[in-house]
Length: 237
Ligand SMILES: [Ca+2]
Ligand SMILES: [Ca+2]
Image (cartoon, protein in one colour):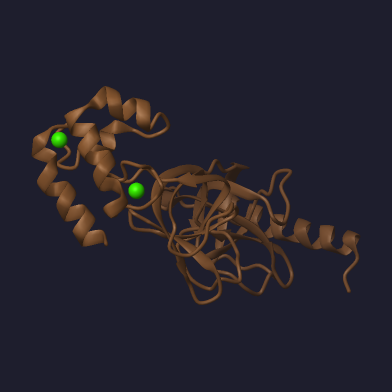
């Protein structure tokens, strides 16, 4: 096994190789600017940058970051660099390195059974592993808000990444007038009340949203919503 001091010596050697190349850098290659986020991972000989967009790179500059950190790297891509790392798809030279900010995710979707895990099938199209499922299970229609991590490592072996530190709750369903999470025949009485007596509806269902009776999505709750409501109830039941 390598000692820490040996590893430092090896890293220094990488820098020496990279700097040597940088000194003879061809300005014509300035166009190959590189920028991406990804994880720093432990390779066979070196710490490497595993980019979200694909590729495993040796960095000239690791800053104060180490294995496991999620970082944004900007530099110049050199596919032909020679290092002792013996793996990867080239080097990123003269690079800056900072913590990478994740995108936020918020949306509704169904929890579905995947090969290894329960997954979140978002209405917006992606299939995600959630960090927190709360009391919910397969078949539930839920609202999820959290941090989207496209490069997470899980044993689920499928999906488009993870949503971390997420909140999860029931998702408001159009037509769910008794707000029990389903659109079915039990919503009919509440729907009729909503369109005929809005004040009576608010009194009877103080925790529900009367706008969920706007089944044709025109912004008002009225008799024009009856036909699309019937379609929702009969189609969903
Ligand atoms: Ca309902
Ligand atoms: Ca309407």
